Length: 129
Ligand code: HEM
Image (cartoon, rainbow, N blue to C red; front, side, top):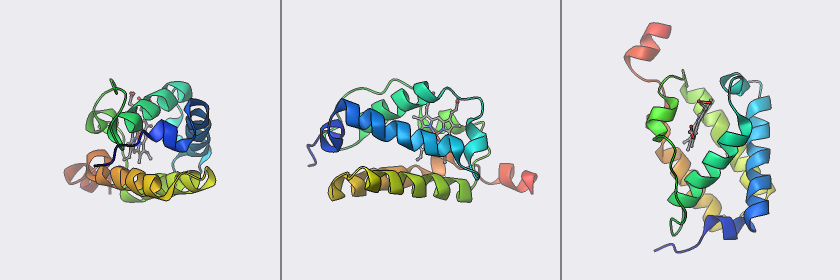
């Protein structure tokens, strides 16, 4: 049983806000995937993502009240390379903020487990190519 709290593990509320701001700054500015975010509210995404990881990692503290991950991405044409790029940026940001090893591992694992929920698959992808 993992009973840690991800916000405590990264160094508290302020540190988590800095980490997530850095993550979204990098996503919004990225040449490969930044275009997905042109109409998004960065501050709202930062808040939502903090709630999400808080409610799904370690001892699952806090509360996430946003849409399901599948639903949040249903209209976005996200392909494997886009997913992998976001995942790599997350990996780099967790490293940059010295997040403890076991927390990084659980965080990246949670992220990867949602791959099939955010990717456009099957008919949708074939129709695009
Ligand atoms: C497993 C990985 C992912 C997780 C856990 C995740 C999580 C989330 C969450 C919690 C939201 C906000 C929902 C809300 O409060 O409205 C969101 C929205 C969004 N995500 Fe992801 N996401 C993932 C992968 C991706 C990928 C790979 C992309 C694109 C490369 C992406 C692009 C977006 C965009 C553009 C929005 C905003 C949609 C809007 O503004 O309405 N996400 N994501």
